[in-house]
Amino acid sequence: MTNDEELTIEFKGRHDHISERMKSHATKKLEKLARYNDRIARIELVADHAHESPEVELIVHMRRGKPMVAKDQGETFSATVDSLVVKMEKQLKKQKEKRTDHKIPGAKGAVAAPARKKAAKSAKKGKDEETYEEVVRKTLRG
Image 1 (cartoon, rainbow, N blue to C red):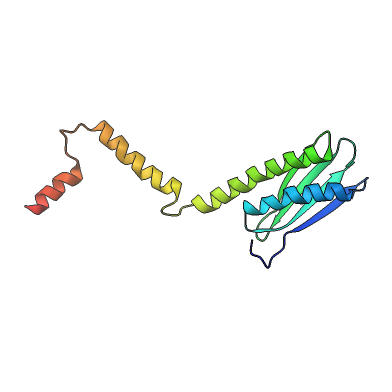
Image 2: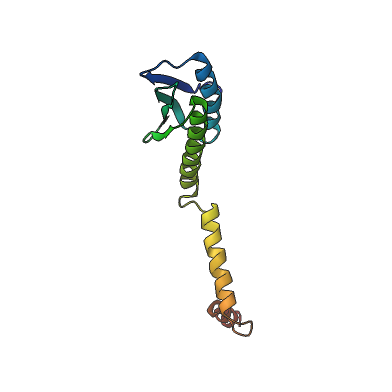
């Protein structure tokens, strides 16, 4: 994210109030999600019964595309938020890898496939055999 764009974090409490201490803990954890994807527009944290066995839902809205959602229920609010951040990190990493590796020459998936094919061909053929390309090159050279 650039310096002029602020990450907006919204807190919503269902059936309970989210205290300032809970908000500060969650804000500290949720701000770390911005390093995994630069397209995050805002984050919503919806807590149901925040003080006793909270059920927390984390919604990450991107500038483009559908929002990403993670839900969890735990013993304490802070433990639930921590586990949700881990879940969302995995989702964001997976999405970023899909976006960067998708049919781009030079990406790790695109480079590894031809190298494996060449290695498989050379393993199948002995050193005594020439490939078709080598025979054609020799005949064209003279």
